[in-house]
Length: 401
Image 1: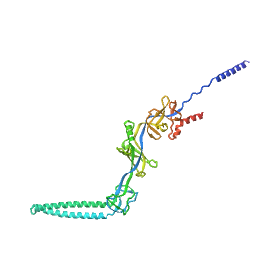
Image 2: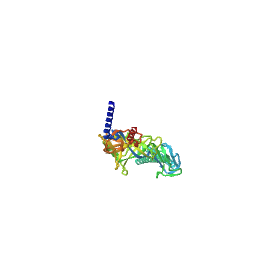
Image 3: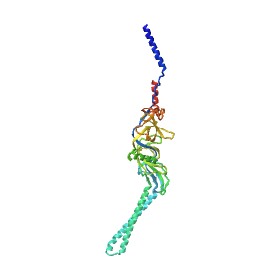
Image 4: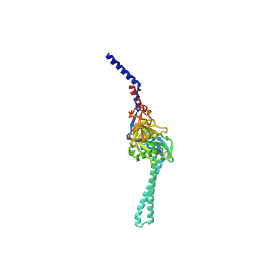
């Protein structure tokens, strides 16, 4: 009997506790803060590069032109082939120039014979004038004749040399070693020295020049960054240049900047740069359009932000969301200098130590309180996957639960 009474008391106490619990409402759990992936900015050393268009040009180019009048007898090279300096390219009819050379040679012999005669006469008159056997006038005339004959010999020598040069011009040779272009004349054509008839063009293409253009505004910006100490300029012999060809492929060999012009083109507002590239395989041809990436120096205090962390507002200005010290989201308007791979180099709007949100951007707004975690960026992951990785982690945690 005593046991039944105790059992009844326990049942009553349990019922009372159940009623009490039903009379109270259960408190909802505290909402969790949204988690965002952030990148903490630290100054880095980055190369300062700029991309500019350009065109290739031969290292040396010589236009082979006629220097005497005449008929082209034959062409002695193959178009598009490599020729050596001094190699004969064309033969112009030498007959009239050979005749002129022979005439000049004979004229020299005549003048030399006349000189010998008057020289002997002057030599004979020398003892006679000492013995007063002839007059002073006769001796002076003999000396004058000797001087005139000597001058005629000099004129004849000059005429012979001119004839020899013109005769040599009938054999047109290559002034440089290089690749011969299209022949502009054929055997039988008449060429003229007065019009400097173009025969062909020889170009040396190893190495190869690349002429580039840089805007004057970029030059001013680089000088300002150098004056502010943000940019360390490379030495002139250390400026490297990389090329992208017309088909989008990269040229495998690196070039060096040779010089930068000091004058701005008033028509385009650009400055001309010239780089020199090795071209052993003749992959670069004169006149090709290329794009060049020029490394002008290094920025030792560059702030680098992944591209997925930067958006643009309605005005087109770049912006970024950061997490402040009290874990609040704040909007920053930026000034970007250039890109580096998948990153932006920011010149203003951020500072070292700022935490830039690069993951979970779609679920936060300025002013919200968030939970920042270090972003896990995959160098091979697409931007969309990287940007949504925190949400995917939350979904995975939910599924696991």
